[in-house]
Length: 61
Image 1 (cartoon, helix red, strand yellow):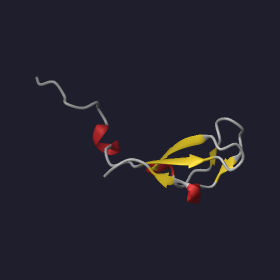
Image 2 (cartoon, helix red, strand yellow):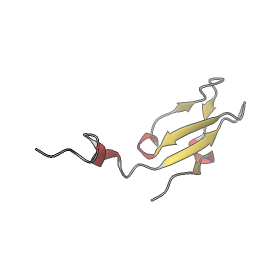
Image 3 (cartoon, one colour):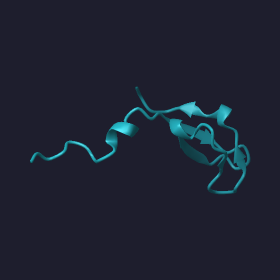
C-alpha cells in the first residue's frame, strides 16, 4: 500500500479558480470559487447581495 500524495477527491477540485468580490454596500471581501458561478452570493458581513460581474480573478492556472 502506498501513501496518497493528495487528499481524496483532490482531482475534482484542482482546476477551481478563486475570485474575490467586494460588497457594494460595505466593501467587505468575499471569496467565490469558479464552481459557484451560478449561485447567488451574499456578503457575510452585512447580507447585501453581491454581483458576480464585479469580481476579480485571484488564483492561478
